[in-house]
Every structure is written in structure tokens, then in C-alpha cells.
Amino acid sequence: MLTWLQRDSLTFPPLDKALREPNGLLAAGGDLRAERLIAAYRHGCFPWYQDGQPLLWWSPDPRTVLFPSELHVSRSLRKVIRQGYFQVTFDQTFADVIRACAAPRDYADGTWITTPMQQAYIDLHERGVAHSIEVWQDRQLVGGLYGLAMGRLFFGESMFSRADNASKVGFTSLVEQLQAWQFELIDCQMPTQHLHSLGARAISRQAFAGYLERFLDQPSLADWHGAGDR
Image 1 (spheres, rainbow, N blue to C red):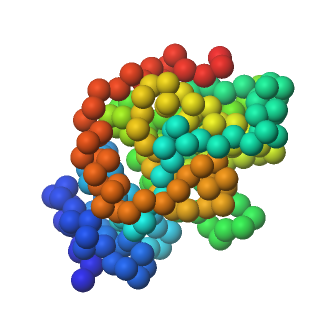
Image 2 (cartoon, rainbow, N blue to C red):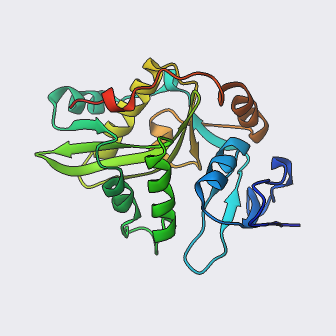
């Protein structure tokens, strides 16, 4: 039975109560205030829904993750990075990145990054929890991604690209920076060919919960304002 969240409670049901079909649907309802979003990620779930649907919370099994040491950068992508076609910054224009991620795409109808969702993550950014990576070409924003950093874990949310390889360059820069900061894991949520090409793989929900328990409250070396190419 699906749990409906109460607005006055930040408690989520145990992860093993998530449905098998659709895979990982854990709860519905609640709201997008910052305290609930932080509680959700700490618990191991995330919001994902379309306009016209109730607010839905997910914890899929298996979970797609990337361990920074397992990042795969192809020869062609490494060549693009060396040639300096793009410049990468961190936390320079979060709102522009999330709006670009929410823009319509040729392969999808609508967007799950609704206007309330955008504002919720902008609020998290202002609290120092959500972060953006920007990819620039000729001073134009051509790619980027955003997510949440807690302890030594990064929870990726979405990325966009307006130029070939732009999102891959941004993601690669993020992973290499997180590895330097001794982050243990990047949550990619759901599998895509794009992520698997960069080294992402599946682990069980139980294993993912173990990483949450071990690393959510570990001190971080991250300096988001000092990162990037500038």
C-alpha cells in the first residue's frame, strides 16, 4: 500500500516498503519545502512527478550510482577537454542551469522539473545544499548540471547540453573535483546509456542505504566557490 505523507511530518516509510511496480515508488503527497527535501535525500528517496500528478517520492532498486574512482573518460572526450573548447564553473548561475534542465526536450513530453520544483532547489542552493556546474563556450552557457551535496555524497538531479559533449565535460569536471574532495559516491538515481558510458553502474537499494549511513555525516573538503576553471 502506498503511503501518503502528512504535511506536518517529515517522516518517510522504510525504503523496503517501496513498490516493485512501478519500481521504487515509496510515497506520495507532502510538499517541497527544504526541510522535507533534505530529509528525503538523507532517507534515500527523491521527488519525481509530472504536472497534474500528486507529488511522488521514489527509491528505485537497483540504484544507479557512480564511484568517482570509476569515472570512464573516452579518448575522444579527453581530447575535447584538452583542447579547451569549454570552460567550467561551479555555483555561478544555479537558477539558469535548473531552468535549462527544465526546458522541453525532443525525446520527452513535458518536464518533471516543474516551476515549484525549480524554486525548491533554488531555495536549497541558497542554503548551500544544492550546487550547479556550468559549462561555457564563448561566454555562452551551453551545458551544465545540478544536484545536492551532503557529507561525502553527491546526489545528481539533471543535466542539459546545447553543444556536443558539453554535459559530459561538465559531469567529468564534477566527478574529478568530487574525487579530489574525497567524496565516496554520486547518486545518479536512474540508469541511462549516457551515464553508463561514463562509468555509472547499479547497486542494490540496501547497499545504497549503507553508503547513506556511513557517509552522510562525514566532514567534507568541498569548496564550491573555489572550484572550476574560472
